[in-house]
Image (cartoon, rainbow, N blue to C red; front, side):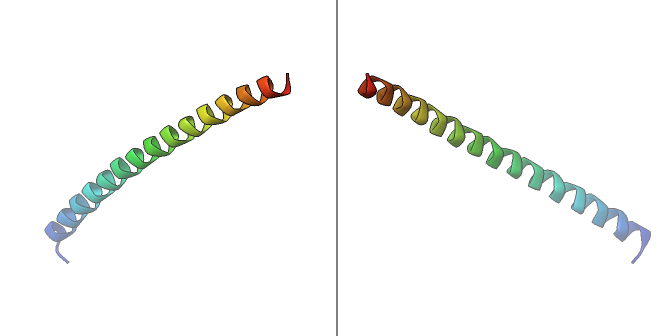
Length: 54
């Protein structure tokens, strides 16, 4: 491989890494949103259970 080809490959790899990082960040945000929703449901149900026990 020539030096020029290596530089081109390096640029492509860096671009692919940036794209992968952005996708992972989006997935992480979705996971956090799902966990927050789950926590809210658990808290709602805990509140209902307390009222039932009283």
